[in-house]
Length: 379
Ligand code: HEM
Image (cartoon, rainbow, N blue to C red; front, side):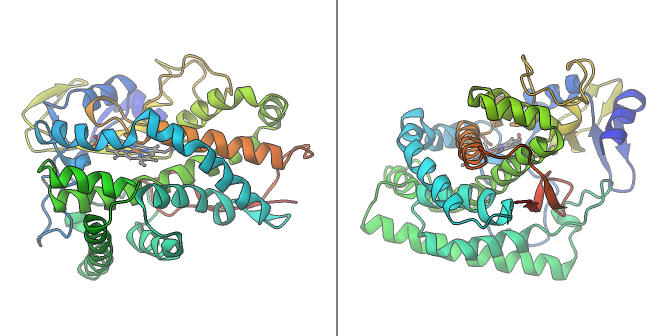
């Protein structure tokens, strides 16, 4: 992919994919513009599905003014004070997970997956015994083929696959509906109770709560799993970086930013042109789909010095891994905190290790996300 992005940034920065009928955008400047100009590049999903969707549009696919209203309500539940309260709990979860690992272990299965899923499930107020079920849901939802030229949209999904996805979504919806009803009776100190409270003041509908829960459960952990996995992969690839951060954990925050840039967990976002617009020397027409390659922007030689080198203490590092503009990742402070705590815990766990060696690395099977579904660390 990296080689292809470099070529596209140079030769065809605005590329029309005829087969699937969408524009692809590769340069930092253009990706930045697509993300920042929400009047022109709408987040609404205009490629309509054939049936009524199971979940209403989530915050991700709303435009202002609906987006502004919903964001102001849900962002209350991600306040710095709320996050600070969670920090010790996240440390405990990370330490407990590492206590249970065998000497050579699959980092994803034993650590990078369960950590964020436990955190988000706890924050939402979902019992941890249901976590295996979440994993099954996620596995069944993400099964796109690993072909860089094949980004498929919901309207292109085959009928049997559509049926499978719908059935998973219906299970999830029923599950969350039960929790919401329970919290109406007995509020707790959790995200769902906060949302139910806003609902009782008429600020948010029950359908909006349910689709937000669906989004949180997916966006809130699979991306963070990939970030932690990619961070460890970087340490194995580059022993010098490993020695640097192992010697002084103070380097972890900048190191994580470089992992976000170099191995961006989310590779692209999509938008729809709201009206005709000139971009990168081409004219995009109203209604056309735009695929903005965040991961390519993060390797743009116009913005980053030696972009194809991993520089653990790179500064400044204006990467777009969490997006930009009004949809900028709501969970970014949480993801950063989780990744930093995860690295501190892992580096302490490995304090006698000279280097990190990986026995098996199996990448995830979708071009949308960058990460590993298996990463076995040698003892
Ligand atoms: C939005 C990436 C972790 C919740 C986004 C967007 C990106 C992103 C690129 C913008 C999408 C767009 O513009 O269309 C990531 C990455 C993560 C991460 C790389 C981890 C490394 C999280 C976590 C949560 C979360 C932990 C919640 C607990 C959200 C939500 C939005 C969002 C709710 C939608 C915001 C809006 O539309 O206003 N994320 N995310 N994300 N993310 Fe994350």
